[in-house]
Image 1 (spheres, rainbow, N blue to C red):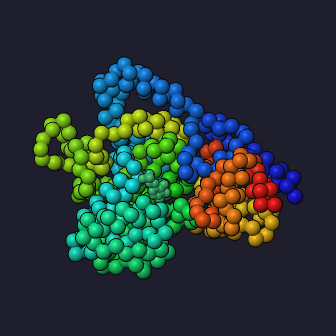
Image 2 (cartoon, rainbow, N blue to C red):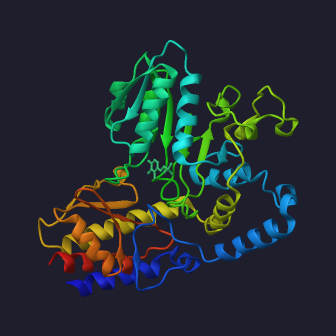
Image 3 (cartoon, rainbow, N blue to C red):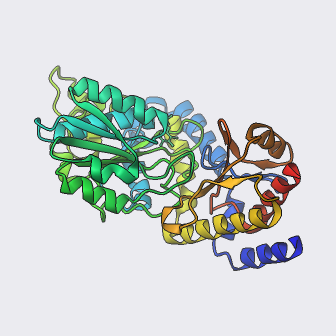
Amino acid sequence: MSEALIDKARALDEKDELAGHRELFALSDDVVYLDGNSLGALPRHVPDRMADVITRQWGELRIRSWDESGWWTAPERIGARIAPLVGAAPGQVVVGDSTSVNVFKALVGAVRLAPPERDEVVVDATTFPTDGYIAESAARLTGRRLVTAEPGDVTDAVGPRTAAVLVNHVDYRTGRLHDLPGITEAVHRAGALAVWDLCHSAGALPVDLDAHGVDLAVGCTYKYLNGGPGSPAYLYVAARHQARFDSPLPGWNSHADPFAMTSGYEAAAGAARGRVGTPDILSMLALEAALDVWDGVSVAAVRAKSLALTDFFLECVRAYVPDGRVVPVTPEAHAERGSQVALRCRTAPAVMAELIGRGVVGDLRRPDVLRFGFTPLYVGFADTERAARVLAEVLG
Ligand SMILES: *Cc1c(COP(=O)(O)O)cnc(C)c1O
């Protein structure tokens, strides 16, 4: 039985147009890395680029690098690299701060864009915790009432009182992909603004922010975008909202003329309005280097491979793992699946520890979810078959 699936994996790897990208990453063949949805792997060329940033740009040019090495303009320049990956025309994405901080900017900004009589903020009931905590604070700060709704129920939860809605594009726990076009349209029909968190979708599947009329969005760069631990997040503000976007964190970096050092605040135009303070240049330039692996890559091809990988993993799990030991919680339907497979398993903590010990690195979402992230740029079909086979051995 396993011979047939091993042969199938080999055939799929041979046909894989993205297979060549794996060698761009520092990965060894004895580990199957299925945790790139938590911390993306290191692209091989990043250490050399960072050595230059540190030794030459910082060590030799020092203060001159703000201009000469392009440090000052890095947030917009790197935002422009991310924009095509999320379907945004130039000038709408800025990089900086954490996702949590950007959720705050985006949600308060969205509420301030909405008519003042709209007194409710709707947040995804299944959200990654930080978005929920920040939504609660943003609602309290802006004097709105917080309403929670499952993404599938947002259409019913929104109405004439809704100011803004915050939803995760892909559920971090189950891997469920939510209907961004449909939910955005329902939010707009109700006259409210849609804010999307793209942490688990950008770099794994097409997002098409502009095409679907999304109002604001945020996402992190250390997952599928491989920016490195704690690499800065990004903020998208649709061009039509930029002139009225009123950031709750108007730091001097988002001033129209920062070096005038005036006491009064005047917001910069465009994406720069989303900046706050001095950018974390080292992390930001590591991210910029890491984004090189996307040159010439089509997001549609990434999505096609991602679905093929998760389909194949589910097929191997069904073939290898004794009945009833794991239950997939990731939807079967492609339209509802992100780029991970989550399996419910009674003994998940012990199983994941054993898997990692045997070179199959996924992660655990307590209490009972085994999570396997599939990053099409560096995970192949043989890796996928091996992961399922080792899982069956551990459970057997
Ligand atoms: C990973 C993740 C975050 C992380 O936020 P940080 O501020 O970078 O810690 C936020 N939201 C979602 C949906 C995530 O998946």
